[in-house]
Amino acid sequence: MNPDLIKIAIAVLCGGLLGIERQYKNKTAGFRTIILICLGSAIFTMVAQHTGQVANINIVTGVGFIGAGVIFKDNIGVSGLTTAAVIWISAAIGMATGSGNYLLAIVSTLLTLTVLILFSLLEGFVDKIHRDKLFVIVFTNADFENIPSIEQLIKNNHLTSKPVQITKKEGCLQVAIWVTGHRKDLRKLDEKLLKMPEIKSF
Image (tube, rainbow, N blue to C red; front, side, top):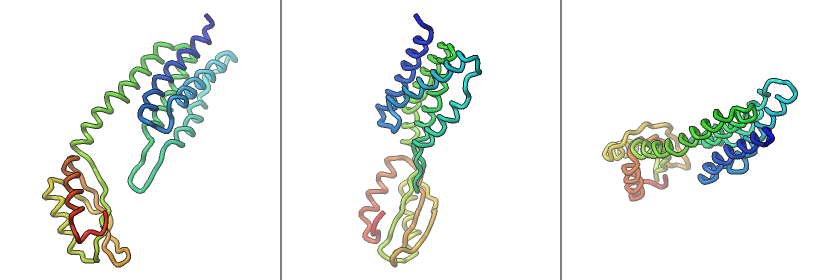
């Protein structure tokens, strides 16, 4: 069998395995995208070898542009970093396949899947017992005495807090505050804030 066809088949297989995981989690770069990135990297590497050149390192630069397109930043945080990393490593796996290093490509694919699946469970557990949440609370008035009462409420719920910003909006006090603690305690805090008449919104 033609060695190039074997390389293409392995690139599609490795890219497909990673793509299924991203597709299952409903990410921006899913099944088809990851396969094409892995396959494209393999083909570029194969072409470079056939023309007597070193594997084209510009693949990494090109993939960087694709990865940047799936990263989104808002006022709260950044999302899409894991998907960008999967795109990056898919290109590396494609290059390994294109250069004929099948064992490296397959082992790297399995290791990446292990990180994405098993470590995701560990990440979920850590997130459950230690979570950061940004609260933006708007009070019905501009009374600064509301701030100590909120801080005490947070403390009573076994949470820690750190004020980020205090502003006045349309005659009402607005406080942005980072709260850290167990997920269930954060949920209880949400319920108590909903019942406070002095809070306009949060």
